[in-house]
Length: 162
Image (cartoon, rainbow, N blue to C red):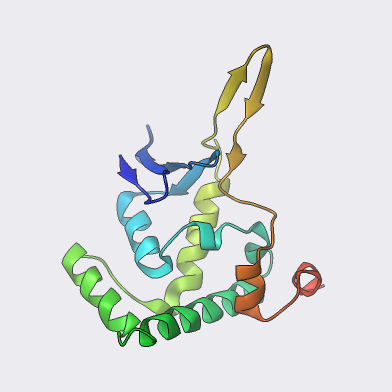
């Protein structure tokens, strides 16, 4: 079991795919293998930044988001006097993984496809006589982060490609 740094845990499922159990109740499959998960995290840093379902409804929108994400990641590293690509390339080499930032949208789409693949990895829990289903790792919420990276309002995002 791997921890995500905020109370969540990654687990290996029966079919060897990777599931995630978040500290806020979100649950789901996030990768088809440990290498897929580590490669995605090497590029994306976190699954939560890529959990908005709307990112995947339009290829052009996903590309725009990924370009904004990479630009922001590089700027954040540069503000600390570091080179994001160089740091991530070094990590990839140490882990024996590939690092190709230009393929971030492909990796994000792979994450999404794992999250929606059936059977879904989910959970139910009981509380008294009631039974509750945990939230998916995917969300319909358009966060400020998504809006900032694509330079669009929530309304513009909702109407993108229509």
